Image (cartoon, rainbow, N blue to C red):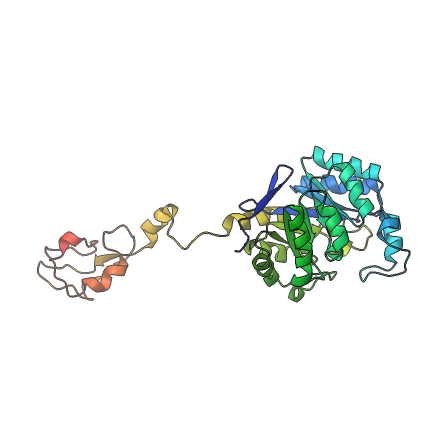
Length: 347
């Protein structure tokens, strides 16, 4: 897997390489502007064994002009959504402290220069850049100049447009990860295109590669781990009955626990070679077959299909794979029925 050996640190957590995948619980704006809900989601993510929560940082006036554009997964304008869901810098600071009290990584996506500055003052360990900003090269360059690791989602972008952002990250000398993503809410399985993970690994061999997923289950994230993904991201909520445009594609605490446990299991299982393991020996002893006599054989008698065959256990000195080579040989001594043959018994 090209690029699978790359790794970097976010705080004290190694990302990529031989490390287990980092599962990011994307709280985003699922709090609907409520710090209390946001705190509940941090607590629920921690209780599910998750290591990282991610928010969105919006300074609306620096991010967009007033508009009436309605996202496909919403029924109101993006301006109205963000105006309702924005968290203050003071609330973000309290939420970061809460996450870190659980031993978790706090990340947030800045959607503007002012948001990046707000997170810089907050002292975040890394920046997450969303798919919509993947080709916002002025903002990518501004964030890269902060000198901290960057996780870049790549939905709605192809290799050529991603490459321009990667060049900015490389020029700034910051370690980076690329998350394959499909910006359809929810994403049908046939639009996920897990093959893009290998494409990103080949095109950007110095990157840690992962998946930001918008399907309705954990299946594609778990499949991505088998393909070498070092980061997994899904939207998260403490309660699927809460309102919000991203709730429909969000995990609940049970889903999150399953993703954490499943991704670690698949990480342990991936790689390796088709060798025989020493730990398989107890099974070999009973499951293999040895060459045995199926009738009494006199000294000098020819070994044929009528007097030898293969039977379990596999503890005999001559295993089933050598059976054909014994046909036509002669016995050096008398051999009783149901005896495991050994080289000393052959003339």
